[in-house]
Image (tube, rainbow, N blue to C red):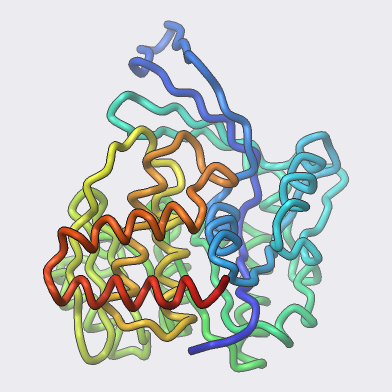
Length: 333
């Protein structure tokens, strides 16, 4: 079990989620029956999940000086999420993402990253690392400088204070800048990725071979998100394949970020590999049952209710795993 605050370095956005009956062809209009506007971004979504699970977190990132930054401040003020290390960039706008959701739950994003990319190495406060238990980085933070340089400054400070390092690669960062991601891999304690990302990073290596290569390099925990096919989670001694939960999905926005938060929560609490994989999968599944992410993501009581219901139809080993998770969650009340 690891104590301390989780530092989350990545983009802070305002998400506008628009469900449509179909994605319009170029030149035509798309109409949404309703819209949600909320604080988002990969690490922010994870932060809301952690907040729901009563895990202390702090955000390392940037916003502009605009109405959207005020919304970020107001939304986070209702949580225990630490805003002390969010920097304001006066000449840049807060990041904006427009998310189009089709009836199958698939989402397509159009983003203006704005102030996010302007995070500088000097914006990374060394004091944040004195009480941290983990540094988690979104792969998007490695796309361009100066944010990329700030991420590497954070890596240096994590090493200085002997803080474990986690990365969620994301697909686009791997496709756009694979060398930067490969450079970071040897520094990691935890890597969360997907089959497509592994194919880009490791070429012809089969998935299991690539994961074994990562573990041999010193990465203690590797999780492979596989969408509807569930997940595969590995450490040095064992591997777990866990199918996805069956839920009524409406929007996949934030599902991967919720999975990430669940996996890291399990790791921080010293849960077994099976329990970490299960709570990650459950949170990822529940995220798809609501439109949008951020503050809309399901609360802890919904997770507990969901797991207790799953326990009734589970076999004995899975029942024991669910009991392990429920015990850890109830301990936080």
